[in-house]
Image (cartoon, rainbow, N blue to C red; front, top):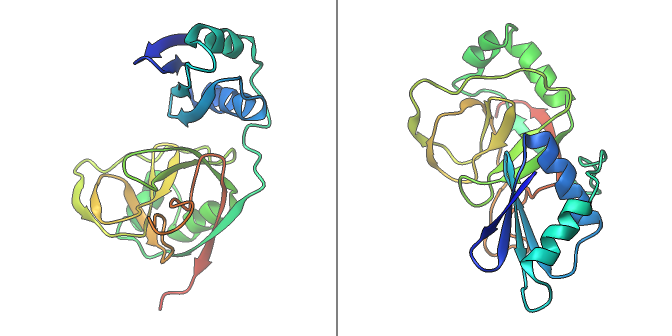
Length: 205
């Protein structure tokens, strides 16, 4: 663990991998040190935003260093079911890349309980991981300039849903109609760090 000041009111905690990030994130959520306002996890870092009027950066850093990462880091009371039509343009390619047919890929994808490890790329885009998903799906060699809103995709160890149309290089395996991000909703993002997700296969309409 390496702690670095980020501006005057935050600490950037550098860790070895996502496993450590999730463990520390869960520990901080369980026992938030005085002065901590927000936590922003990423693949190998955790940004800890503080109120220096309540606690100094050094005291928050000491509190973080005393914490023991939690092994129940993927537990959450919230479960979101995401209905998916599995007809993505990359479905066959993605199945071939992990050495199975399309039916088996859909079976594996829907059998897992996924968890939002962190958010990024655009508002409402959650990077989902699953303990039983033990394959790495390479990104496309040539990213698309337009990925449709609601596209369900795979890249590396992650799955995700594009909240709106955007460029992207993930493998597109399906589509859903849920609004991943709605500024008029509270909270605006449907998928937030810690949220559990189940993908439910739907018939093409």
